[in-house]
Length: 150
Image (cartoon, rainbow, N blue to C red):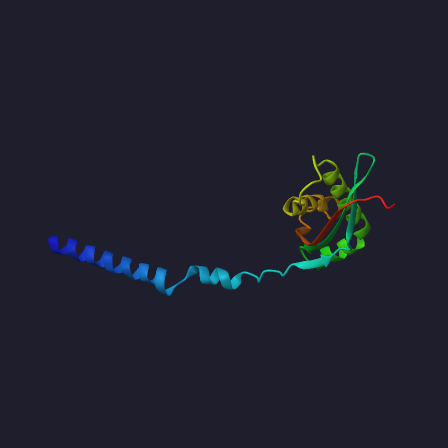
């Protein structure tokens, strides 16, 4: 009886070890999933015309801000849609920036570019729909205090 138990235990260990070796070393089940997965789609970019924003404070222009923005879009049909809706997209962005800068407590200091990016990304849904824009890239920022010409 002891001999049968020892033989069964040895067989279970050999079969278990062989299965573990095949599963972890020889057969990689994730390799099949990796081969079947389609390659990721490269994002499509669209550079916007320069956005010029005049920040109005106290009945007059307080600052002049220029932004160079590029959109990272989902795919080529979305780029075509964005190009067709460019006037609306620019209008939405300029209104969002005007609202942002007008409601700032102070115009002193530097611009919060990450916050501006998040705001433009959120407002892009109004013009192009949800998830059309993957990211907003701010390529350049120029700001200057507005001074009245003599």
